[in-house]
Length: 515
Image (cartoon, rainbow, N blue to C red; front, side, top):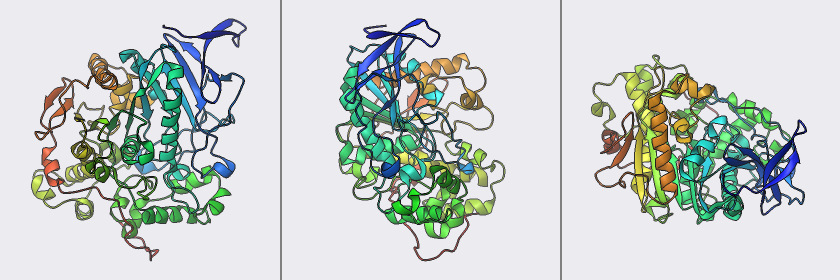
């Protein structure tokens, strides 16, 4: 353990304990020593988003003079639950007055100058927090001599609801504020602010894709790793109609004034009661997704979709790894209770609403359910991810994760996250990967961590850049480099731009069905 500046204190049992202190731009913080690392949790990077700041852009926190205890995670953002998304919200830690916009740091050397990996969690823009045990940064930090940072951002209505009188994309603005905090404070924790890599999965990787397109995020990171990028970005009109529907569920107007009197918990409950599929007549393709929120292409915070922005040269100086799992949508089918229950009518409706021409002919041996799953995997995650690497004008590297989860879930959405961090135990991990990590999982996790941290150090991930041949690192029991395994789908989607999704009709209160 290198250069961990410490100050003595008396532990809760009365025994002396040495705890490291770092001085941030807002005040000093005292963390803990855990093995070979100094760990700091619950450091405010923005003011609590409550009261007049509830639906506002993040503001700097109030500075402090006394050493702030940074031993436990800060409170999590308000969580929503939509059963069909298979996302389970958490309710703790409780608010300690610091608010939810806090960061956490794992570092082995407070006096060092190490690359920084900054994690952006997923959760369908509905749930998630940096307090999740799966995002503990110790194993990853030990792998490659990096500093690991995780942080909270607002989700659900609080972070992504399109509310009159409030800025759009507050969750994305929280991510920018966290990265600004990393820029200003990385050195205090032994990190190099010139060597920042953002990495994230699902909604977190959509945040990263958005950051690549956002002028206010320019210069805040040098590299990015986007795991399973969702392709749904929406217009202000569509987002406003979704928010109006949610607000109507609690008898309020979709304005700052109308919603300020409604608790986050009540709004989260209204979100949980929403069935997207009942609004297909107005929301079109968006109703086939798994969440009522997505980043809004508002022309200000987010001026264009990531694919359009990257094609026009945005973030060309940022190196990018992007990829997906093979069976992305399988877990969503399971979460909806639809495995073995997809009908031909459902598949035909989805093909009509989402698919480019030629899908049925391209997969002639597929059953209705297999075609339904392939289409949703492609539309939601696989092709958006593939297009992001294709459209980036800077250096990009593509991967596909094919190691199968336990049971019938295949190489499903999210199965790669545990291997990314090296945290191979815990209830969710056990559900996906089995109760005991076997030698294959341990070995593959080490291989992935080695690639991710080498990339963060500027050495490249260990496989060739994406090129016209579709060069892809295929991550299975024995990872190999080959042409893109999903080229058949890629050919079908070659001319699709993943545009900003519009509101189909602003007039009716009628409901359609995708069933």
